[in-house]
Image (cartoon, rainbow, N blue to C red; front, top):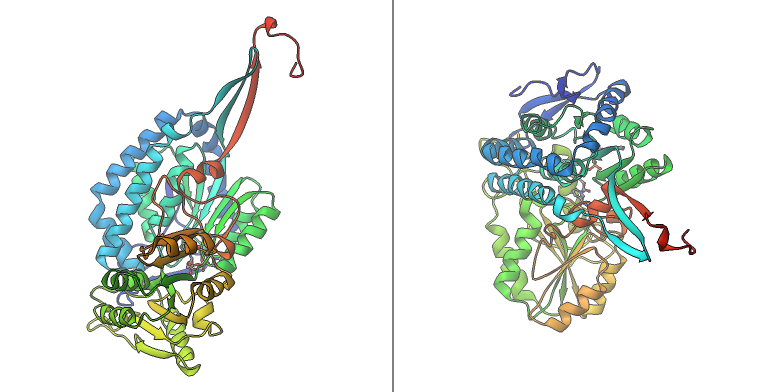
Length: 485
Ligand code: NAD
């Protein structure tokens, strides 16, 4: 094993788990074992929560201007260790170097947003009646939890951790058992940045730990990012335990391509969106709605897809099971009558035969009833459905249970505006393949792509990570007696 067994982190220390069970941490790039990760026990979860609880009052009482100083240092350490973090993300997740680099860059950007929090969370004050003032202040919740998926081992933890902590909470992080190494490194950097013991804690594990987090009486809020199936369970279980919860789920993102779209820009953007991070992005293009005759654009997409080569500019998918699932979807579509224009099945990379690769795949003449049209594939695959009108395309998009993102490619402002208004998704792009809102805008989908009231990043996260205190004051008797007295 290249790395020592993964440890839990609480009370400011890395702690060996006593769990009987461990999982292997395997690099999808070549199938080599990198480490092993404990399936921690509920007693260990309790110890981590006790550590977060003990630190909560002191951290909440630290002025935000001081809390934020830790994150200026953390940001500097992310930059200082940039290449090492890039290598780790790539190794454990299977991304290309450039994709892993973008993930570290995005983690820095998220930290910068958290560093601007003192400018954003000032309360409000107003004289609401003669001599009577109301003021509002954001208060931390206490101990909060963040449960994260495999596809962004560093970025998704940085969606939640910096904002929640700068706002005065203490946190339990539950990394994906498939990629626990980046999170562990994150804890080391936070410690080096001077974060007080107990403010950030990691507990490794799977289902049992997630359920333990949802049930735990000392955890006030749970954020979750992962598949819709688990997002629903986590949302139901943690709100049943009377916690606030935001649970982001899976996606099936539709790209509307209109005949007047800029051909080369559309082809490069669609291909990059569907194949980037090997299609393992909740913002990846998964279904393309070809409205009218866009054959020349489809042909250019195929040309672009052929330039995407596993092991060069295309990373691995997370596991042999994921490879099989993706290839099975392609085979099923072919059997159901779809036409495979570019076929990524059976991809291998010389010298990395143990790796799990799927090449870019373009499937045409998909019909809305096929599973590749309806379900999340989470691989570098685009399913093209042909329609005669924008309204037919919208009907297909609207009928899908997910609602993370949708994009339209066109030069017509009116058509773009119509789709922006009628697509049933939380994040919309116009001539953008991956319409991720950058901070201070917030990230979050609709429908089965998100459960709970708030988005997970940006300004919307402030409402999630804090509670509002409303205070009404009157000092002077001459303010008189009225209904507020
Ligand atoms: P996953 O749902 O399998 O796992 C997510 C987390 O839940 C992990 O920490 C895992 O240990 C835990 N978990 C898994 N099964 C569980 C169960 N039965 N009970 C309780 N906990 C369980 O997701 P994944 O495969 O790691 O990630 C890929 C999924 O995440 C895709 O569906 C993708 O679209 C989604 N995702 C969504 C967003 C978004 O912003 N909407 C962002 C990234 C990923």
